[in-house]
Image (cartoon, rainbow, N blue to C red):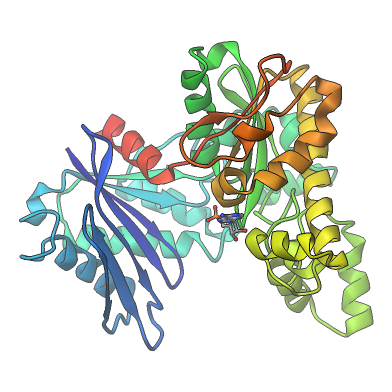
Length: 397
Ligand code: AMP
């Protein structure tokens, strides 16, 4: 079967056409600047080069129309006709408490996703526009919603409740939800498979370290805690997000800098994290590593604070699960930044973890980076959210 995976942002749209038998992508790409001047589509067929076409995209329907046109293009298309697409899998950011798993999209499901819009005002409306546009252009093709939050719905109340008046949970559903669920689910299962074990037999910590970053504790195949919260702002220090801070800092900055709540929230989301800590040097760990090695003090503080923070979460989640068998690093930083993995693991000697430097200093497919006598197995595992969405979609149709 051929499954189209759509990940719709407010002004961008990522897509991948996946052959479910081989689990290989047939074509993939990205529409950028939807609704803004200078929109373009980047398209690549498997085995071919990337092509960039500048074309006006006033809305997501036009973007999806261009994606479908590229996929069926006579010369560079991956399919001849749209009827070859058997199903569409949509990434949906927030499923609230309504969705603990992926679901076939029906009019009732669309209404239920709309009810979660308050919880993700930037993301969910964009996801819904993508679903609507696909339904218009591909009527009758089954569509599935795969939620970023669903994998974390197995958390117990003591992990997801905040120390706030209970009425806020009742009235507004304020609680921890967690994100990157598709990645945490995929990587925790892949880790078990790599170790020749069943997920039900393992206590695993997954560190999804990308521009956005989160950690999850997966006990016997189920998520029992995760670092992101009601929104993706909580938890680890990230590329540009602050992660955990004293909530009173918001009021403090607002007074000192004469800013309103929205302006302070923009600082916490866009100007903080390792970017802010490094003195606005960069949110990219390649730049930070260069600066760190040249002795840049702020870059050192940014990297060390980030790594210390991840290590503290690993310690906390080891307590939450009463032990840990394996730790996996994934996403842009987790998969590529050997020095970050090394600095994090230096804090974990108390768990009997030792790292094999030669293995750690490699890149590529799933790799064990701990030594044979390490008490906990540590790996890096490339995440593949699109494939995970395609698998979920296939399972539901
Ligand atoms: P993601 O959000 O998963 O796409 O991750 C993007 C981030 O991964 C970038 O901002 C970089 O910080 C990091 N990254 C990507 N490639 C490398 C690399 N080769 N070395 C270190 N960090 C990397």
